[in-house]
Length: 105
View 1 (cartoon, helix red, strand yellow):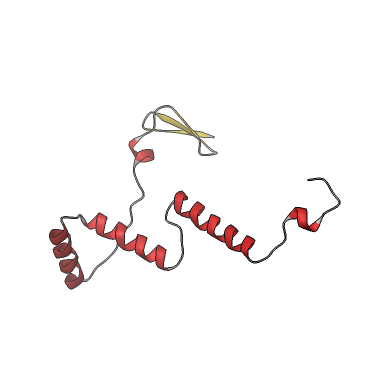
View 2 (tube, helix red, strand yellow; view 1 turned 90 degrees about the vertical axis):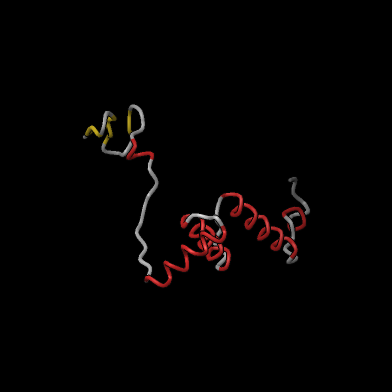
């Protein structure tokens, strides 16, 4: 089953043919509700730091993810994974060669 959306054909499996549409290119948007006092403070902070509300939100969410140990991007995830592997090796876990001295590696 296929259907057409603004010049692109989209198959039932979600794959599309043709040029990507504006709908496919746009970022996912969600609404967040602030009380008036909080919104006024956010606007003032944005003015003071010459930052947009989106930049303030990005920074706040990045700080929240960091606080809870959630990687922000692939680079962060790889760095965290490397640290975990390094810690596991330092815990005294014997290597494969140490466990199997009679076998070839």
